[in-house]
Amino acid sequence: MRPHERYSAIVSLLAEEGMVQVIDLEESLGVSGATIRRDLLVLEEQHVLRRTHGGAVSTNFAYELPLKYRESRQRVEKDAIALEANTLISENMHVGLSGGTTLTRIAREFAPGCALTVVTNSLSIASELAQWPQHTLIMTGGVVRARSYEMVGPIAENTIGEFGLDLCIIGADGVSSTGVTTHDHAESVTNRALVEIADMCVVAVDHTKLDERTFSRICGLDSVDLLLTTGEPPSALAGALASNGVNVRLAITEVEDTVD
Image (cartoon, rainbow, N blue to C red; front, side, top):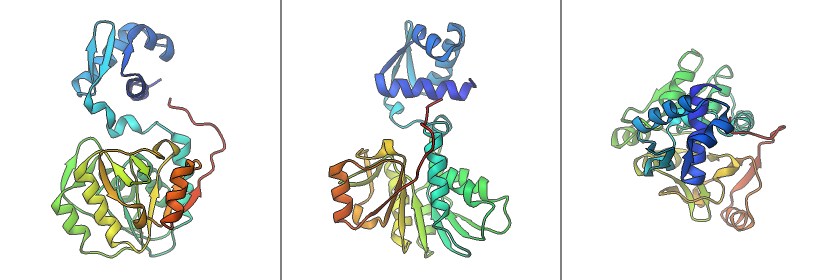
């Protein structure tokens, strides 16, 4: 298991349990106690956790994992979402993409395909698309969030407001009957700017984000045209989606996903 995979597994356990023990991590990850202690030190230096005698406890920062530790989570589901999202795209469309690991995987699927004009505030997505000359890539500018590699703030919002989009696809940390939400307020405002200029809004999230509500609201369900996900929404959420005219499309995975 590579270091980033171990980091992701450790922080995922912290998010679930609130604390971890070195002895338990040795057994579950199959590495030595010395390796686990080095991993915990790395994560503490990045303010993801606080070390304790024999283990570590979560900090407030652990509720939103840094992007590089989220890349391996729900990997199979993200691949399925990316393939399904590709069916929404046609030649010469103007597409807006927010950031995050699911959207980066979607952009990777778009990359070798038909020519698109893409507006994005994501450094990760820009790096995927910049190498493909058939695409016109427009980056927003703005203040970079280190946790998500997204550019946010008034510069990003003003740039987005200059355009019109056929379609925007946004990620989220939660989709509930109250709307689509994310952890960071500045990020939510920038994503909302994409929603407001698009003829069609698609929210792309794996099943773990369904019926979850996080800190800052991106938009209400009435602003969403399609929810692209990997599991049936719970009944209350399904009712709210239907009453707001949101279509739900399931991206089918062939094997069970893991968090390795």
